[in-house]
Length: 307
Image (cartoon, rainbow, N blue to C red; front, side, top):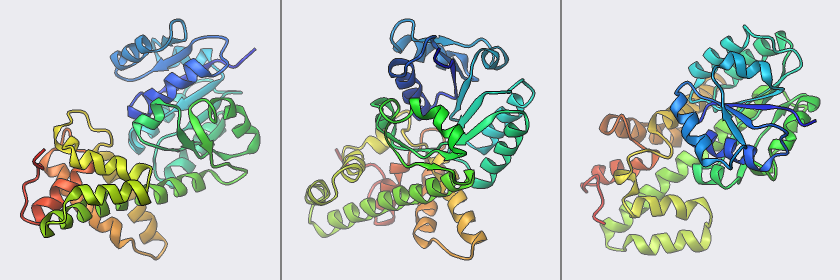
């Protein structure tokens, strides 16, 4: 009999992961969905194939029914609070896969808390934008004992993810170190595309030529972020794809990690400075791509591009 599964946390990435697990994994019973805002779980369940998901009435009742628990939450505080709640329950024989982007020290702490209660634990951050989560094209990074990682493999490659960077046998915190380093590449990419487009506009080259360059030489996420800038998505969008608060959280973790280990990340410092400006300008709906608007303003252009 296939394990029963619970998914906790239904943000932009979590919704896509949960839907793919519900519809693609070999489950004998509906995927249980739990979110502190119940309506979010209800809305997602309505979009999942019939009889493939069920909204959990409470975390306690849901945990009692399942063998596998996925967590994908916004920040370290939310993860710690949820883990503290889980630690009050019977976790014997269950496996918890923690997919949030948090500080490596937080991962180590929650692993100690959960394994002390008899649970297996896997640190499993994921790379990819919401659209990649929706289409099952994330890249998962599971770390921890191989026996624990093996328990969640059926929900990764070919289900929620297109590929796995397998760190089974490695300490939990290494998966989060990779996740934070990887996210600095994303921040630096957004910063560089923004600066390149602004320079192209200022000198009269035109942003479309830069975009074509990205399409031809750097296909993949470079053109996708470029298009979000050029179409004005960064200032028109109501619900951010990568909220500025989360982007700053990730940058802060990376900068702290660098400082604690005797190095600097000057590019990340620049990106974080621009993220802070986006956060101030649009605290509720600010998106990482708003960096483009900030760089435009620094060059004497309007925050909003003319599209």
